[in-house]
Length: 359
Image (tube, rainbow, N blue to C red; front, side):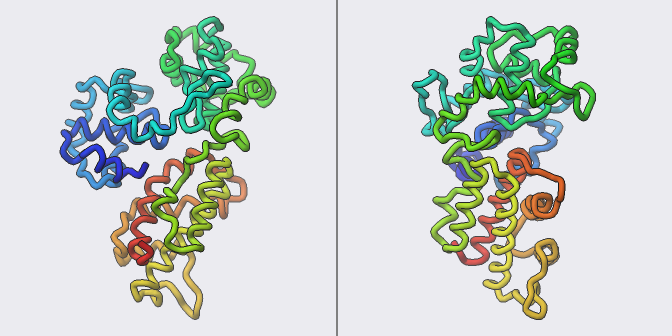
């Protein structure tokens, strides 16, 4: 669901500051799978929603008083309380609820092709497992469901609660996690990753929960049918060549081919920018001797001329998405890399479709 559509559907501009913050965080949770939020980092979301952000200091105090959130991890980071999220989901979940189905083969509830954490906990009978077994299973779940690759005892304690399990005692839990044979230390101290030989048996046993969902997962990290970067009902049907690119972007994203997805996103953006300059009689600004400037220089020209009503932050985020995939020899894109710029990309493309008179 597009952010601006959600803003209008919720009549968000008539809400108070706390309600607006709750709704924007709820949107990110439903649309992008976000689990943590901070007032400090929500500025861009307010801008994308075309809503003025209130004073951050007072907003933070109001948000903590409202009871919908609780502190989580790093200072200033928040997470929905269970009651807070349920209340919002009851009121607004129907915007996404059409994708909910019941999977008869396992009894697990599938939302758009993904498995809910509490259902996974039931299937694995986690209440009868040891903490070591549950830590391994919960990390496996996050790998399959959110493409996460790094884990820590501090963060995983909250996941236990979300799964309906008792929160472990932190000192003993950290010792247990440190000695767990299925993981190896990586990066920041206390952060772990699966050993390949440990992940394989888990995937053999539980991978069918994702493979048998609405759309079979082509590979680990793929996402369900119907989920994509661009809303085809909105962006397609305007220009045949663009329709093909949009189809490739969405299908690559669903298939887990994130590098391919990012490269085609970059190509479509560049084409839209060129067409926008051309449609507005400004083609000479970006072409010399019959050849167009590279994307980076075209972006600089847009910013320099403040053209097409684009947000500079959105444009930089959207144009940077294919840099590493197209030109980074060792970098591999993940779903999180694309999701972090997905809203910016949609906003930029929407403005460029208008500027180039496609819409």
